[in-house]
Image (cartoon, rainbow, N blue to C red; front, side, top):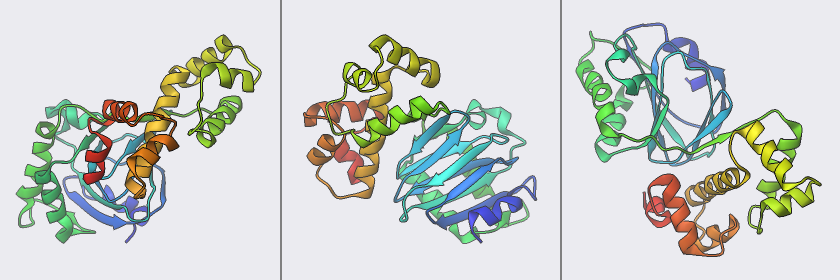
Length: 261
């Protein structure tokens, strides 16, 4: 059973944990469920779109989506395995973790625990099942595993002019891009361009450019074997050290360490 086919099944038993391990490259259209979703991304990248933002979930990270939150899920690499547990939500008020969207690096302990659940793949597990306490314990340790969510999110907009500018930035990411140069290219003043980004994306031009560069860098590190220096140049950094510092600011890890995982 694929994840799309399993969506109606997830909420059938209120107090259960529904387990789904799937290797795929697909788009899961907008949906929500009455259970909290824990998903571990193994070997690729996932993207979660909620309202006006798309969040990037790199390999060896997990995400938590609170019950009732409408979202779109895109699995962006054919090697990605998404290991998902949909937890009962009647006790979610015990900790703020369970009511907030979050993306976190996965510890070895959590990875092993999630992998262990593959024995229940495609099933509802309830308190009547042997080892249900294991799943209860897994949910209970989540708030203690990490204190800070990975803040890699890119805003989206329906504004056609902004979309045109974004496509240009993405196509020319390896070039020397600046507010002045982009404004001139699109026949706008720098002030007008700045206002356009703030009004539609709620971040500055430079913040947005840095964000899409880091997201592209993550994709290249995960999906290819290209040297870090080549990746730095491909996303517009002339200095490997400057690229490494920027990457660490976004992910809490150096590019070389990130690749090792």
